[in-house]
Image 1 (cartoon, rainbow, N blue to C red):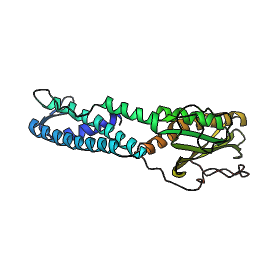
Image 2 (image 1 turned 180 degrees about the vertical axis):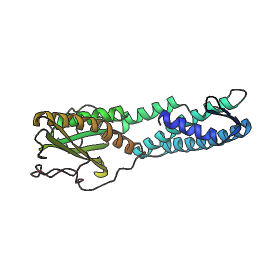
Image 3 (image 1 turned 90 degrees about the horizontal axis):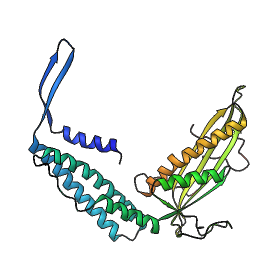
Image 4 (image 1 turned 120 degrees about the vertical axis):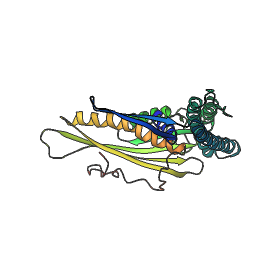
Length: 286
């Protein structure tokens, strides 16, 4: 919930109860003026209706979060409740402006309390593991992990069931979700005498570790150019890291929080070329 979204929602609600009571023109300056007026009782009723609706939604989401045994459902319910509570505070601030007394109406919950509950649950009950293979796997995995942490998700270094890497750290909680992916980076010939180009692609799947079911999948890729093959490759790796830590991490987090539904695919998405076919450019956005 960004500040722009909150401002837009709040402003739209206020404008429903505004009318133009007078207008005039400064002929010498060529400027037009308008005087707007608001009917306070009507505006107060509109704000209270919206606050009451949000209170009902928040209460239902908190009750669902405390009653469900599905971990992902609990996270999504707490996230919805927190977002609606932030929005409610915005309406309540506007209500204090509308009321001559300057008083709002108290909420049954506090944003800090729900946020803390969500963070604690994520830290102990819905941990992610990240496994990336292919070209530039280490910087790609590091970038994606950092992005997921910035989105408020917990990432463990503890190996998941089926991880055969000997160097994995065995500390930390066991993961509930596995983010696995493959990345490819290769040079391409576009017959440009001045520039060299490199392409990258990535395919990722979000897997429920317990059921081993794929619950989300996405692909990203792109192309970058420079004066030499080495510089083009270095640039494409930097861009890849930026996309993984921002776009891919945000999409996965939004899926976990229930704000975006990633398509679930049982097989690997077709964004990257298969082994042995890396000389053929993949079909990827750029």
